[in-house]
Image (tube, rainbow, N blue to C red; front, side):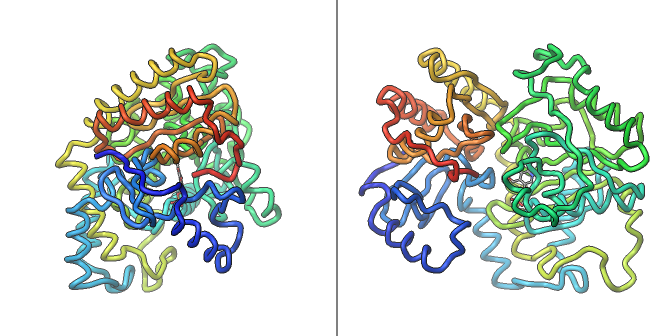
Length: 450
Ligand SMILES: Cc1ncc(COP(=O)(O)O)c(C=O)c1O
C-alpha cells in the first residue's frame, strides 16, 4: 500500500485543528508552523500507512517515534485490547494486580537477555529510566551515573540528569539533579583515536578515567547501544563489550537503554546482542506496547533484591502501573514480534534499505555525507541542517513522514518493522525527486523533532 494525496498538505481539516489546538494547548508542546506547512493531524493508521484528517495517506518512516514496530493498529493488538477492555480496563497495579500483569512480567523475563528476570513496569520510557536509576542507587549505594554526550533518556527530572542535550536541561537549571556526568560516546566518524569499524578500546579511556576518578560516587553507567535521537550513531563493534568489561572491572552497573533499539529494531532482539553483551539493567518501552503506553525496567535478581520486599506500600509505583490494557496490548505485540520474526525481518529489510540509501548517496554526493545505522534504525547525514529539515517538509508533501535527528543534519528512518521493499522503493524515489527539485520548502525550523 502506497500513499495517496487528496488535498493540499496540510489540508483544510488539519489547518482548522491546528487553529483549535492553538487556543487550548500550552504553546510549547505541539509545533504549529507559522508558515502552516506542519503538522498534519492523524485520523487513522494501519500497518505502515497513516491517514490524516483530510483523507491524505502517508508512509510512516518514523513508526511514530519507533513505537509501531508491529505496524499501526496491528489487528492482533487491537483484538487483545478490545477483549481486555470488555473484562478489566484498570486494576490496582501494586495492590490487587491483574493476571495479565503476571503473564507480561513472565514474558519479559523470558525475552530479556541473561538473567534479567525481574521487572518494574512504567508507562513511558522516562519511567523505565527512573526505575533503573533508583535500582542502581539501591544496589550499591552510589548515586552517581555516567552517561554519554548526545545521549537521550527522556525528559522526566531523573532522566534529564543523564540526557545530555543542553536545550532540554538549561531552562530547568537548578531543578535538574546533578548526579549525572557525561563523557564522549564512540562516534566512529569523529573518533580521534582511529577506531574505524572495530573499537580499539582507546575511546573507552574516557569512561575508564571517569570510573577511576569518581570511584567513590559512581554506581552506574547508562548507555544507548546505538544512539537514536542523538543522530543514529552506531558505535564500532566491540565498544559495548569493552564497556561491559570495564563495568565488571570497576564494579559499576551497566544500564542499557534499549527503549528505542529494543524489540527487534536493530535486527536483533536487543541491540546489545550484536556485541553479546548482557547489561545489569535493561530499559525498554516504545514498541513493546504495540502503540499502547507501557515500559519496563528489567534487572538481575540481586538488584531486584536490593529493593527489599514490599511491606504494604511500594517504594516505587504509580496509579496505572501494570495497566491491564497496556499489558494485554504488550503481550499481543510481543507475540507478533515472535510470530513474524521481526528481528530477523528488520535485519534483512534493513540491509535492503541501507543498500538503497548508499545508492542515493552515490547519486547525490554533494548533499549526502553519510549513511548510518543498522537494521531498521537508519540515518542519512546531510551536508547541512537546512537540507535535512527542508526534506522533512517537502517529503510530507510527497506522502512521507520522516523526522530529523541529532543536531538536525540527520534524517532518521525507523519505519514499522513490517515495511515492504516496494514501500522502501517508493520512499527512495520520492527522496531522490525531492533532492532533484531542490527540496523546495527548505526553510528549516528546529522545532520539527522527534
Ligand atoms: C533511548 C531512549 N530512551 C528514553 C526515551 C524516553 O522515552 P519516552 O519519551 O517514552 O519517555 C527515548 C525516547 O525517544 C529514547 O529514545
